[in-house]
Length: 392
Image 1 (cartoon, rainbow, N blue to C red):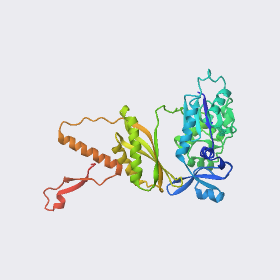
Image 2 (cartoon, helix red, strand yellow):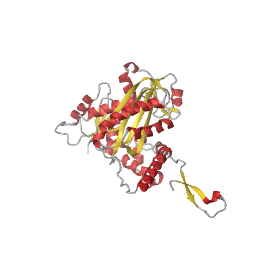
Image 3 (cartoon, rainbow, N blue to C red):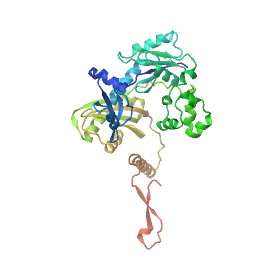
Image 4 (cartoon, one colour):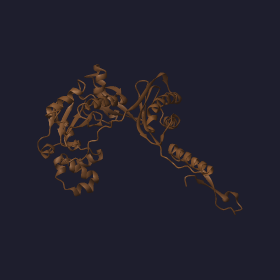
C-alpha cells in the first residue's frame, strides 16, 4: 500500500487569512467555547508556547496583546470539504482525517502519474494558492503522516529508506495516543520512539493496556489502519439568514422546519428518514453554536424531527442572539417494520408503549408509573396498590 499525506498545519488560521488577508502577520488566536470555558482552537504560527485546547487564560498569560477571533467551525469544515473534493480529482481514494490533514491512496495510478513528483505536483495544483502544504509518501498512514510532518512547507518527502532509522529519534509526542499516556511515557523516561520500540511488549501492555501494544507497533513503523475513503453519498446541507437577530426558540425552530421540508423533499424518493443531523447557529458577534442530534427511530416527517430538535434547543440554550441557522443531514435510515396486531386493544397498548419509549429517549427517565395490585386484602387503602415504574 502506498499512501500520500497532505498536511496543512494551522488550517483554521489559514482559512481566516484566506478570508481576510489583512490578518496575515498579525498575532491572532482563534478560540472556541467548551462549556463555560474558552479554549484555543488555533493561533498565529509564530506565537510560541501555545497549543490546541489550551485555556484562553493560560494563552493570555503568555501573550497578553493577541487579537482574539471566535472560531467559525462551519466555515472551516466547508473549506476543508472543498479541498477534499479537489483532491478527489487526483485520486478517487481520499480520507479527511481531521481539519487540515488528508490521506490519498495512490496505488495503481502509475499510468496517470508515472512518478512521485508528478502526483505531488497534481496535488499542489488541486489546492488553493497560498496553502504551502506539507506532503509525505510512505507505505502506511502513520509513516505518511510523519513523513509529511518532517517535510518543509510547500515541499514533499518520500520514505524510501528503512523506517526504523527514520523513526529512531522522533519524539513520543508524535504518537496518536492520549495525553495521559504521553505524560506517563515522560515519567518513565521514554522520550523517543526508538526507546519505546526497544521495550518488550509485556511491560507496555501491563502499564498501558491495549494502547501499549499499538504504541509499540507504531514505534517500529507498523500501522494496519485502513484508508477509509469518503463516501460518494450526496450531502444535504441548508442554512438561512434570519431577517433580524432573535433569541426566540420558536424563531430558530421555524426556520429549521423550513429547511427540513426542503430536505425531506430530496429524501422522500429513497424511502429513508433522518437518523442524525447537525444543527448549528451563528450569532451576533460571530458566536457559533452546534449540536449533533440523533434519533432513536428515523424521523420520517418534519413534525417528528422538530419535536426532537425543540427538546435539544431547550436543553442547550443559545449563547446569544441568533442571525443564521443551518443544518446538515449526517445519517439516513430506513424505518423498522413492525407487524401490528389484529386486535385493536393490543394495537392501542403497543402504541402507548412506543410513546413511553420515545419519552424515555427524549427525557432520560420520565416519571411514568402504573398501578399494581399488591395487597388487596389489606384494611389500609394505601397498601392495596403500589406505583410501579412503567418500564418494569
